[in-house]
Length: 330
Image 1 (cartoon, helix red, strand yellow):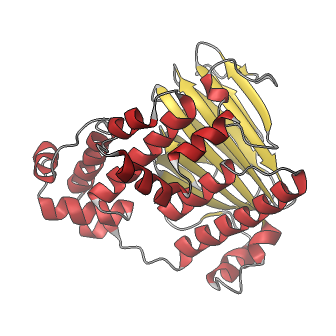
Image 2 (cartoon, one colour; image 1 turned 180 degrees about the horizontal axis):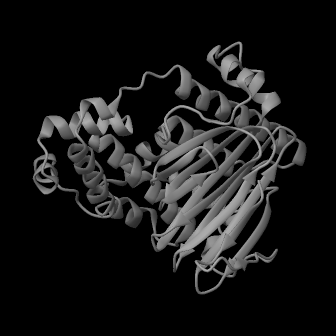
Image 3 (tube, rainbow, N blue to C red; image 1 turned 45 degrees about the horizontal axis):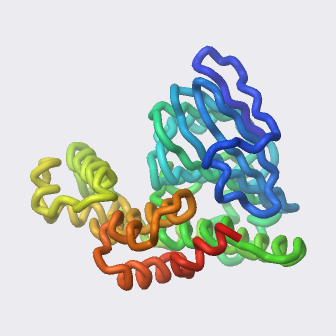
């Protein structure tokens, strides 16, 4: 899962083994190898965990200027890139180009595939890259019969849609992985392997079993653009009162039925279910990275009553806000 970071002039930016002195070093994963870099282009912390049949890399930080990344999917297997914030334009050798937006992921099955990515939007970013060996993927071909033909062809291929919305179930497994704390190495490794297998199963289930409506045939290009604009407007209101559905429709120039059905089709969630999920993710970031009181955080993300906030947070992440903060301080 090697990767190089490049300036727009294709000058390689070398990462080092020192942890950054800034707040992005918070949320370190137990057992991960870490590299970091800070210059005029980027501030980044890259954490990697390698197993026999899987690997994961989490890249977080701030982008100050446009950069590029290049690498190679060397080992045969399934590769996934998940954009939790920001976005990239990705070019996979012989498989095409696509735009990977925030809250979307892509899957590639194969090996020896060169790729380049361009991150253009200044600001914070969080990217998850995962790898599952071909041997591990093949273990599931009896569960997902369509895998047989794909694996038998031995051709590099994009699995499922070019880009797919990150379902809450995948986010939940991801958060369980990064927040796992065990007293001994053997328990941690065993738990991680179980969770990565669960992650793989969910990815293949989404690709082969989960019903996916064909958005492009149900909505015009301008309607799809309006739906994405509505998402962007909601993202700008995470820490304040969002517009009503009627106000949102007026702002993006689409009727209420199209917005509601389009949002559900593209993001697999209703407008305000998706919005509330983003608010809770924002709350988690504040708990982990600031010293704000929980009451302040509750109000910041739109929960006037702390009790309701605690209930919603525990339902989403499986832990109370107070427990998560105590764990951070320990």
